Each structure stands twice: as structure tokens, then as C-alpha cells.
Image 1: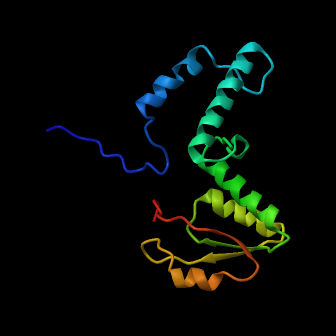
Image 2: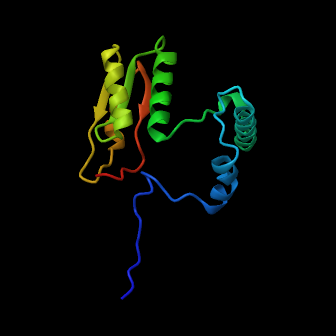
Length: 155
């Protein structure tokens, strides 16, 4: 009997597309400079990074300066939530999230609570779903951010 593996944790990590692996091989083997450095390999890596940023910006229809690379989902969550909270603080200090968000979201919200932000943690049902009515009731005139995942992979 042949066993076939079925992978269901793509929210955590996923296999890299073979085309991406192929495109990245030179940067793993020859062009591995730190793009923040000053030497030739670093400058080559910086050029490649900026070219990638420009290509992504063109696809998204935005400026290259609006494309930010991070190390992964957690860093992205942290940067987005902190950035919105601090930029919008003059307009309000209330954030709404669910009780079962990723730790990167929950820990960042808890950190912001220590800074004086008010956070409402909307409950979920047994399937990890947020009731839209609960969400609507949680939003008020001081709400600057709602961060709720569409589907929860851990409930």
C-alpha cells in the first residue's frame, strides 16, 4: 500500500514554488551579499532587492517605496498593527481583534494596551468564527483598526 502525504498546514509554511527556487539559486550560491553592506556582493544584492521591489510595485500599482519586505508573517503583523496604531492615534485608540488571532497579533495588541490603547477581543464560536454582529457592536467612534483573520487554522 502506498502512502500519500497530504499537507494541511500551508498557513504556517508552504513548499517553495520550483520557479522561485530556480530564480533564487544564484543568491544562495554566488550572490549572497547582505543588501545592507557596502562591498560589491552587498551592492549586487541591494540592486536585485530594489529590482524585485520595483517589479512588485508595478504589479500592485503602487510606488516601490510602499513595498516593504519582512522576514515573515509575524513581523508583518507586528509592523502593520503597530504602524496603524501609532499613525492613527490622534484619531482614536481602540483596536478590535478576535480572541483566537495569531500570537503575533495578540501579543502586539497586548503591548499596545500597555501603551494606553483599548483593545476589544471579540469571542468566537466553536468553529473559530467571529459573529459579524459581535464585530459590529465592538466597533466605536474611537476604533482605528480591526484585525480579524478570515479563517483560523488552529481551532
